[in-house]
Image (cartoon, rainbow, N blue to C red; front, side, top):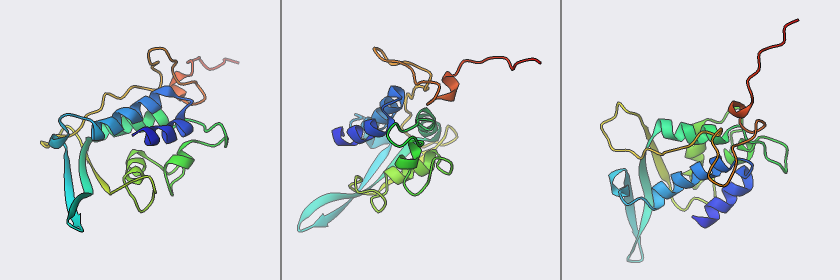
Length: 166
């Protein structure tokens, strides 16, 4: 998880809430005590050793959208381009959405950092299936000891002003 977060931090560091939201998403998949309720591993065998071949991961669609929304506006400092141009695989920031981003992060044929396929199943409240619901924060929120995302990276952080009258 550390290397995944270091990579995310390198792209999204300008907005600590985005990195936090990504961390709770990754931790929910790897550390949650109740993960058997929303994840199913499919195993295979190689040389008499069993391994995880792929995972079905039921996750709340609104939670995934909230994580994406907290990251979508971030500008990458080194390139001056939207961070999603780097983080969404074949899609750029304009064509990426929350599902495309998560699907990219779960597809080993598109990313060398994915050890096995993660088949995201995006569910909402109308589903009877148990799904992971993430307590994602908005990019306007500050983490304890940190700051909210800037107006440049989170349009919701920009102060609202009435249009000038002329």
